[in-house]
Image (cartoon, rainbow, N blue to C red):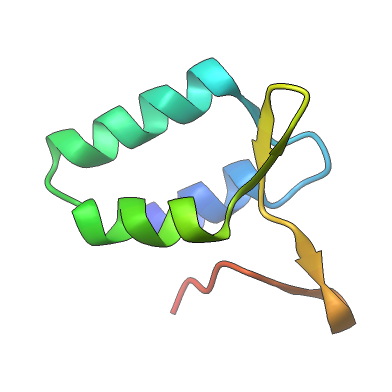
Length: 66
């Protein structure tokens, strides 16, 4: 369920603000989800103070919720 929330937040053209992204990572750290933090950080892109998952070929996204 947590991965679905993260995917919903970051899998769109607008993404989330840098403040919201920092809050998300702080929350994940507070519940000891360090592997998830690493996964998100390795797959997220940022531009103009916004964080999002990039779209890949064939409408596939970087973040898998399985």
